[in-house]
Image (cartoon, rainbow, N blue to C red; front, top):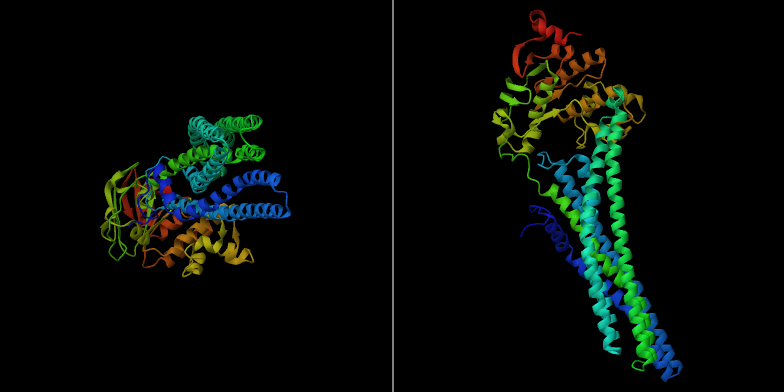
Length: 566
């Protein structure tokens, strides 16, 4: 039997069925308790009618005591069944929402990207709002059944008094639900579109936050904010449309319920006037007519929540059912740490070929920055192996043959714009909490001044995206994290562009010392790092055009001298 948490996720309706299936126990308990609540609520006006009926016939203190005791039992049942029923359902709802949030987040954070046309901000919205609204189905079904119980009990009780009253409740309920079922379809479609527009606005905000500093630098912030304003306005308009549709739905439901309640009351009054029902039955009928408005309202709102849950589940399915960009192999690299790039053609790369032997420190001087970025993307497996020509070998094996876990264990590519997370210096340097090489990594990356500057040391709190650090401090923190990972093969992409020349020299020496005996590839134009390398590869027009030490290239290659000399 498959575990629902590990089986292949499926589209919207199947996601709802999965949620219902694994919460069936809680839903049964909740349905019983909420059904008991609705039955007790319905019993209250019935009991009042019986009390009036018997009191008029038998005016004794014993009958009064029994009546009061019966009402006390009903009220106690109403209170306790509601409290414990909602507790069971809300716990299941919250737990199920958490499960789907984790599932969506796990898909977004998987090393192998999924082929889905959504940005990170949209996935965040799906992992929060859509997961919560999908989990609401856990409460919707028991409340729907319990409301049906209330209407059924009221219809039976009224039918026993007079068949016409019972039929009126049944026919009226069916008519109301038929009208509202048609209206709920539009709510589902409108809500789905609203969620999509809100997600796009969230994605735009995420992009703005990431690029805010550069935007301010070249004065593009006003145009960017204008772009966000347009996306946000679209989301606002759709939200107003959804609110309008919901308002029409709620108003129609309330009006129809009121008409049914009035029809029951008037019919009961006419029957009592004709002498076909007793005064006690009239009291019961009027009380039930007023009471059934609440379960009818709840009952009539359920189709709307079902459609909203369905729409949210379908949006989650966009992420959960998206196929991976690539299918990793089962192999592991051979020990040693050799890295080979053979005839890679991707983007600006036009057949780049080179080898970094185990334990070697090699630098790549890319004359075109885009070529370095394309090479880093290929090595980081951000580009699927089938999406480019040529191959990459780690430890003597093609990267397409390796499991993604083994690639991540042996090969680490640290981007030039590495993310900084809210937390502390320590948790940013050592997210796994192993703590084996933190001190050495801090020293090698010249992050010691940041640690010494704050009395908390490595426990100094870092804001989201490193907002309380300078650009150079963020870059050194990212470098420290890469060095602390102590990977067999480490690829650094422009690790010192935001630090001064003196610090850059120290970092170059420290990195060489710390990485001695480990394979290291640096994509850089920094003279300090180029000079520290065992050899330098020149990447020009997408191919390796020269190979030598930094000093020999300076002496004999004028183009190289112009490209890297500062």
